[in-house]
Length: 151
Image 1: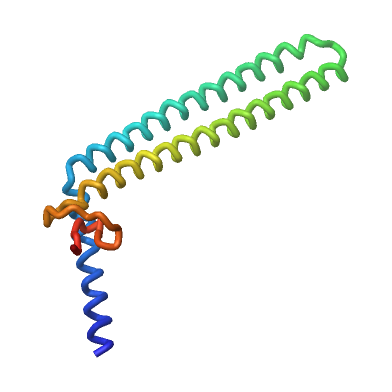
Image 2 (image 1 turned 90 degrees about the vertical axis):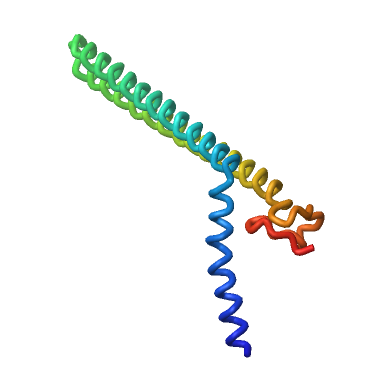
């Protein structure tokens, strides 16, 4: 009997999960909300990635200019020090740009997760009344992914 109950429960879960996903994916408002969140994330990624690589190119061009101009110095020791300083400045700038880029990427991802949660919460609030038409007042009575009320 236990085996039958366990098999039945497992079968119910296996059937319920695709039904829950299909119900959420057929909700036009949820899809529109998620589409907007994904587009915003993509646009932010593209914008900040372009900005990041433009900053890197500017740093490389500045470094190249400094190294070329250093060869006007006749003293070897002074020239070597200036080249070393230019290399150090380039390294520091690139590290700063990379650090800032990673911070921006994390912020973009966090904003997307927040937007996704808002979409899911709005969907969950709408399905509390579906399909029976009864409003769930207690979370124990509601099955938001499925949209079925047990009252």
